[in-house]
Amino acid sequence: MESRAKLFGHPIHQMLIVFPLGLLATGVAFDVIYLIWGDPTMSTVAFYMIAAGIIGGFLAAPFGLIDWVAIPSGTPAKSIGLMHGLGNVVVLLLFIGSWWLRYSSGSSNYIPWTSALALSFVGTALALVTGWMGGELVGRLGVGVDDGANLDAPNSMSG
Image (cartoon, rainbow, N blue to C red; front, side, top):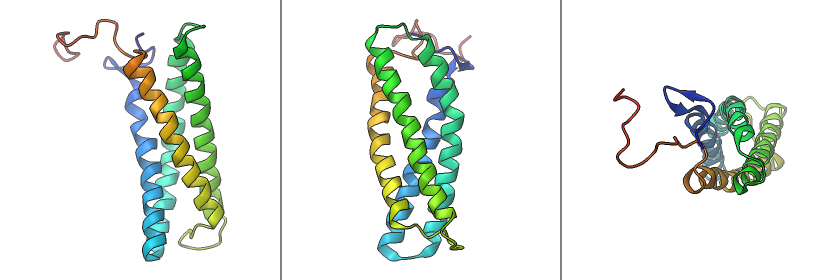
């Protein structure tokens, strides 16, 4: 099934999801570095990575919804897509909660409380599951894949 939202022949959702996934995971990586070495600069970096990841998630979501609406009802792809999308809404809510707790901590370095860390760690674990579901949709079920895709197909730059 071909994507309904494309830019230069490529699915927009698939192009954009790398940003929230990468930024949110990087935020958690900086949290771990902060926990190991105690450098408050790392918590500040995590704060801004999470903020950017949340923005990226909001940018990617509408394009995923456009593609999900086009999936025929009663197919495994429709139900997996629903779980993928709803799961990612929960991921964003967990990270928004984590970001807000850091913001409201009163610290100039956005030192995370234990609850902020827990929300981001749970959000990361859930993002691994929802990311796998997204890979299942594209790689196994062919959602967002050009109908004429094959190993010898002309590429989008060849005209």
